[in-house]
Image (cartoon, rainbow, N blue to C red; front, side, top):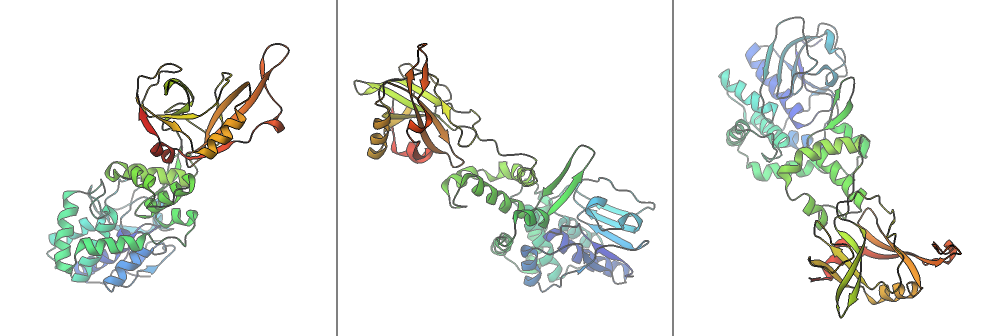
Length: 417
């Protein structure tokens, strides 16, 4: 049995691994006896990059501790996130930046926690308060942890202490944090070999009570996982897709939502709610101007992918002018006095629509798939003996016409008033 060991949580990120190594170095110098750094899980690509950069060995892997083992916890305190057997270990110290939960000991201990963005920020202060010089290697590991946990100081959890610590550590380690930080974070996003289930477990902390069990995904893994799910759900082309860029443009406001949302979606706890971005329908024209507009989908309505939303009225005539209205409200079936986007569709679409809407009476519907591609549906009708309009048999109905992505169509239309 080792004299004293130090470790972080079960799903180690860069802060957990680097803090274990740094705390072991600090405690070895304070105690005058060797303190051994350990880890409770596999090391991710980002952390491997940092360890290689600063020529540091990975802590040894352990699965459980024996009764009475002297331990120091870093970057966590909850027993559900810790090593097997922690309840019977002798916890001598904790250094953490998370909430205190489900934690108790039978003896007094050194407990140092601060509301900062990273455990290594606290360790930086402990070197100073103990008058111990920080080696360049330890400085490099601590700055790597701060970069990781604060996303290069862009995370909303970043504090002034994190910023000052990073600046001081960069001087000691002789590192350009912007260049190195981007390289390290980029290394951490190289996760294509992992499945979504593996991604969740790479950097997850379990939070449990009697009403809730969820894996909270942290670090850079959650952003990659969210990107992957968004692209999959909406058939986006990846980070370069302009729709994805627009969605992620205000990163400072959505980072927390991404963290929690990624965990919830990945854990199957919630699904993505889709709403119609605009009012969508067709217009009738009079003297070259919009006369009436008939909407099938309304802006803000919750929509199910590929579900057809029908107009209940029975129409005659032709569907030629598609209307996409970005206003919050509409004046339904009346002369338009608000700005809308409208225009005739391409020739092939017009030909198809004309051919199926020459019938005396029909109804139309709109559906949107996960990528917001518009499809027009038409049902030709006739009157029955009771004077009611009913659909003709399914095998005689025209096939749906797929128009294209709503934003692509919008870009080709003109604004009218």
